[in-house]
Amino acid sequence: MNESTKEILERPLHGVYRWWGDRVFLAVAVILGISIIALGVTMAWVLFREGSMAINEFGVWGFMKGRVWDPGVNFVFGALPFLFGTLVTSIGALAIAFLPAIAIGIFIAEYAPRWLGGIIENLIHLIAAIPSVVIGIWGIFVFAPWMREKVYMPVFLWASENAPSLLPIIGTPIGYGMTTATIILALMIIPYTTALTRDAIRQVPKEQREAAYALGATKWEVIRMAVLPYARGGILSGAILSFGRAIGETMAVAMLIGNKNTFPFSIFGPAATMPSVIINEFREAVGNLHLSSLMAVGLALFVISLIVNLIAAYIIRKHSITGGQAV
Amino acid sequence: MKTLRRRQIQDKIMEGLLVVSTITILIPLLIIIAYVVYNGFGALNWSFFTEELGSPARAMQGQPTGLVHTMIGTLVVDFIGLVLAVPVGVGAGIMLSEYPEHKLNPILRIMNDTLNGMPAILKGLLAFALIVKPMGTFSGLAGGVALAFVMIPIIARTTESSLMTIPWSIREAGLAIGLPRWRVVLSTVMPAAKTGLVTGFLIAFARAAGEAAPLMFTSFGNNYLPNHWTGMIFGPVDTLPQRLYSLAISPYAQWHQMGWAAAIVLLSFVIILFVTARLLTRQKNY
Picture 1 (cartoon, rainbow over the protein chains, first blue to last red):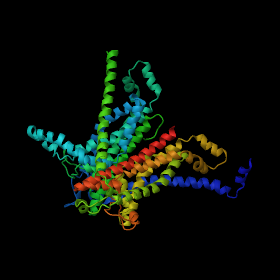
Picture 2: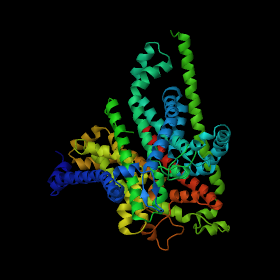
Picture 3: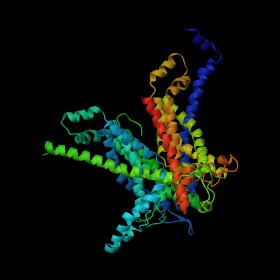
Picture 4: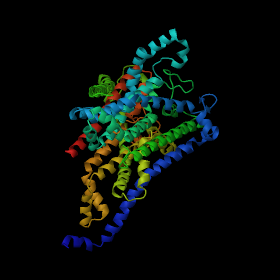
């Protein structure tokens, strides 16, 4: 035993330093860790408490099935339009984004030479970093007017001459509406889905590919038969996490969806989603019941996000060999 | 039966499809960036960085207006968020990585991932109920708390993964020379993982800096600089993302121009943070 170690051991504070030090340190870490758990629980509890007035007034199912949202005259609140708007735009966005995102993921991981893959990857990261409001301002001033001129108006005029019965389904082509919001949402989740797909494909062991090559498979056959089946759990959970992203995406959607609170929605016409109605009305809401209803919409959003995230976590755990971690 | 020739043709077709779809997706995304850069730099001028916003009349009469109060407010609110989030996130990350045997870890990990996936707007609602309602006023503090809720799960996750990259032999070496466990973590593991930790903070900070949804009903917004600096913390404060939204949906053409300017400032800020984070990780890898 050399001298310095001896000194340490003979220090009067040694017990404090060792025994208490370890316990205090662990206690602090655990308290901070528990505060994250508490944060999640508090979120659920607060949303429930704040939304309970609306839930008591209309009942859980009455609120979720209510088709009328009338904060002005009758003070009747039903969340169905927003639930519908959220699900339709998110599912639509995922449907648009899914295949292209997987294609880019495969391209980066399997085809692109190292330098090109690096460039594309950095581009994807760059795009994922663009704040939602910035995409929103582009949508308002560039994309929505362009879509109105080039897509919505021609379709609308064609329909009014040839198929007037379709007009209510197509809706007014003001440019700000469900289709615009869905396309922008798709653009916004593509980087996310791509990154998760690429990660899943990168985790496929080399032997898996080499075995397929040894059987004489072409490159695409290797990807289709050896790589994709192996990575499917990761890709699927990535898609579900992207769906969760789309559900919660707020600013760009609120800026582009046109914000119409009542049914019927139409394909090109304005609509609303759960986050967009909260953003638009929360700052101006005066009635207690109105505020409480918005909080109840938030609670519904919480529950849906929770389910989506837990499903994704379950799929990752079930499919990955390492029992791995999300994202 | 498929001949070799057909399989090779199919192989080429799929390769072509992948290349084409990669290009068609990247183009619109690059167009967005090009538009923001072009319009944003066109709308920037000196008074944008020196003047307050004021009432819409000020912009419509052509008087100099700017967003100096917004940029200061953004920094204040973002840093409040970072200061609140770092201890919690790092603590949880240490618990996950250094005490893997702890019984609460599986729950913590699931909860952290779930919180990370929760829409940011719900974090704003939570901060509204916890801070704004009891205080009776919108405030920069409430905005900072809302952003901390956004950052915490990210920091916990990045802390955990950067501590995990440090080999166990480092810890064993520390324990072998008689260091207590907490000293091992603080003096050997954390310094070794320093770059990773800082990268995580930067990523969380950048992600939160671009969020408008949690700020709409916590820091609320303000057209003027507060009279006293405490107004930045205890009064309504302007922040770039939230101001950008208000400008974009306003009916004034001059404000739309300022919106583009705000967009380029916000985008540059966020991208600089991300690029710094990426450069830091790159240095570590080589």
